[in-house]
Image (cartoon, rainbow over all chains, first blue to last red; front, side):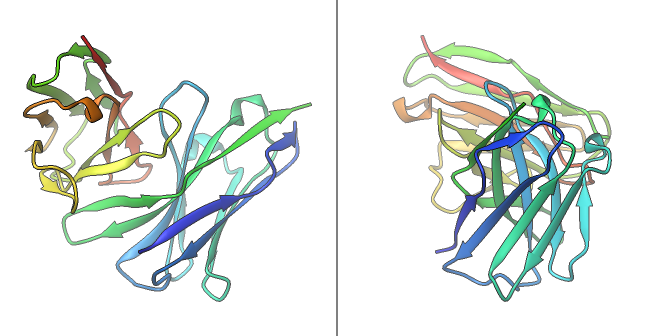
Length: 122
Length: 107
């Protein structure tokens, strides 16, 4: 059964770069029917899609992040990585990675990692 | 961006009640609509994808319907473990967007 685990610093200084990795275990990371997503949730608020990376390395990002985000995948290490630069307090959130599944008529995220809280502070 | 309008934002219901949550999108998304359940301190879990397809392992009391711009999640008989927050999400086009959530509370 596929499992995902996020890891990275829990505290990032204002204006610096947030870097997280998502370790994938228990299943294929190279299946063309899947992609890897990152989603975040500020404390007490709703979910915000950050972006997806696909098997060939193509990535799509939320424009609301103003070009500050980069998502990659390393199949040899079985992990996806998220980088968000020039962070502010507004980037404080629980960050989730998730496996995306795709068919001709649908896309959905399953499973999700447990999430990791990242606090941005000076 | 496709805007998601989810309603209600919260509701109170009793065990055994039938519960309906709606999600409206600002443009057609065909059937690219997913529903997630999130319990406090936990990651979201997919219940329904493709607007009406039940994810494996999810109880059959959950069902989804709709297409185009109007969608519904129904819980036919609310159980104690169903008290949670529910989110709709469109996956038709990027940026993927989520509804604001519906918190289902005990009456």
